[in-house]
Image (cartoon, rainbow, N blue to C red; front, side, top):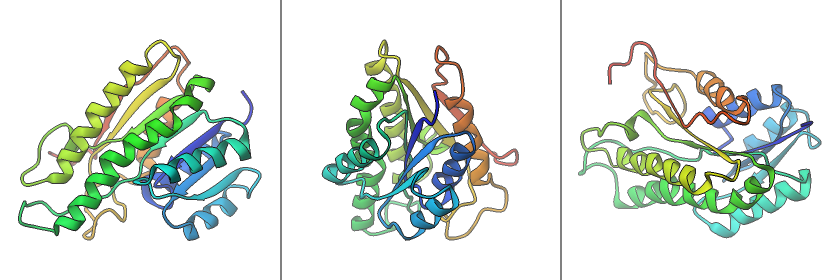
Length: 228
């Protein structure tokens, strides 16, 4: 298929931006979504301009904005082949840390936002027999002390498997990407032993570029030096 279409939420930096670059190199047209489009516009220019990419303002916690994101993608490019529910952020560990307001925003973004991305893209992915990816975390496989963030990623782990079961038989593949420590703006204090965003992007593209009959359901990728 020529010029397939790859949609990414949380595309303005980190894993999202690195995946956009990798997907562009693989021949995809890009729908790039984030709350602010300033950095997205720069990425669109880098990846070939409006013929190859579109920047879309989208707060993933608002379903009407997610619906508009998908509508813009289909209007611009006519199809949707890959949807990557990547938007999310973290919080300090400790149930006496952070504000309840930040907790609420994190849960809504990481869990509700990912679910809305599935809901908004599922019809188009069925039409194209496409691929759904979600950004989980190693924290979604083993609980971390005092980590509500970990709980949100456990939810994403379950969501990925639930989506896979619902989509079984439709031709749509589902992959959960579970990074360990990644050197991205996610951290205030950058980890010294960490993956780079490009490392995670390669894992994403490994899953996406398998033959249609191969569904890589989970990829857990950690830096060699990470013990947890």
